Image (cartoon, rainbow, N blue to C red; front, side):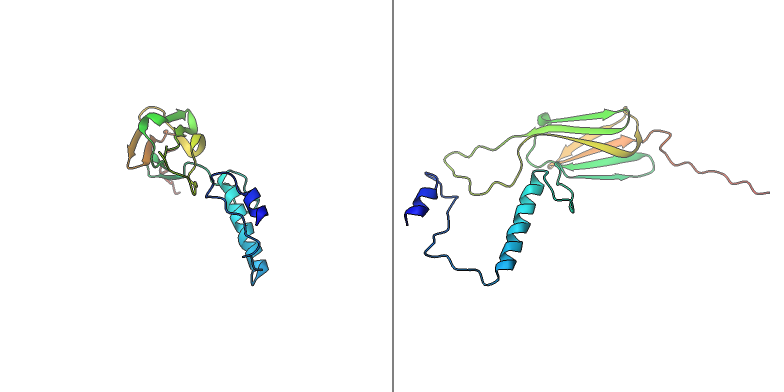
Amino acid sequence: MVMSTLLRPLGSDVFNPIDVTDWTWPSDSFAEMDRLNAEMNRTFRRFGLADRDQPAITYPAVDVWQDESHLCVEAELPGMEIGDLEIYVTGGNQLNLRGERNLPTVEGGIWHRQERGYGKFSRLLTLPCDVKTDGVEAEFKEGVLTIKLPKSKVAKPRRLAIKAE
């Protein structure tokens, strides 16, 4: 069909328009529309354009937990190098992770799907308590960045004696 040929970009095997001669109406058109809607929402969430019901996905994914004396932040950064990362701890309760994830080059290949994000990122975290900027330790192992931040004296729990009369 001529229309299919006109819609196809030159040299593209990724985009295959529907051939009208092979197309049939889906058995459950509403289910197909729901599937398409879910796929579009997933795509928009990847780029921070989430619907109001679900928060936008941010990069990198982090876990934050604490013990009595430290706050720990773990960030997933697969495929990154130490030289591509910057960590800033500001006084109080702010942690900023910055970096750049480079797009891999594929010699002689054609992309069929590209879901992993690339480019510069900056993630500002408000921590649940104040931390000291000196004594912060960071370790990067197997694509996971672990940052151990000492809590400030104000943030550490203190047991109070109760007086009874």
